[in-house]
Image 1 (tube, rainbow, N blue to C red):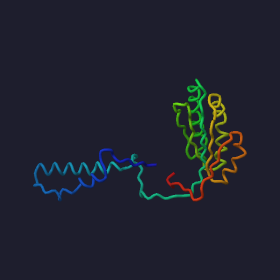
Image 2: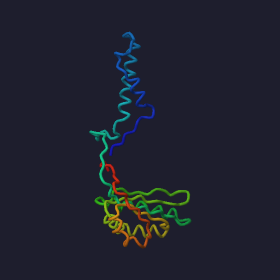
Image 3: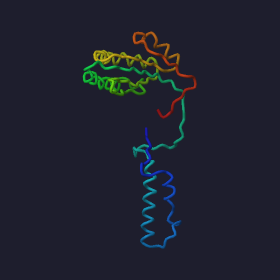
Length: 193
């Protein structure tokens, strides 16, 4: 996805105020007016490029946001690393990432870890296109999860998504004692992701 970042030194208002055509500048045709023209053109180009896509090969034809129903199943496990085991635990995380990236292209919407915090907490942020996708994930990373749980405990597990999909997960996830959060009807997400 393209991301747009305004330049820190250039605000839209200042671009519009200073980027006036040289015909509006009442200065005689001299070195001063030519320098002013160069400065105005430079500001105009800088301001225009400040809002250009980062990737020059991709452009948006429209900045209008469109929406669709949100059907994502979100799993949020919170791990508490055992005392003195941070290094061993952190070594497992790249293995999760590699395994998911290699085997779950059709079902995983997003996946990553945040942390550790000062209290040695790590959260995994993960989203799937269905309950079946989440269950496929758990089978895929079974060995990595077992290795992680040698060095940490899951102290909290939240599962969020459409109620019908959550029902499919209650029996398979019962051992983890998760908290289920049914998605409110009418929830939506961008069509860009």
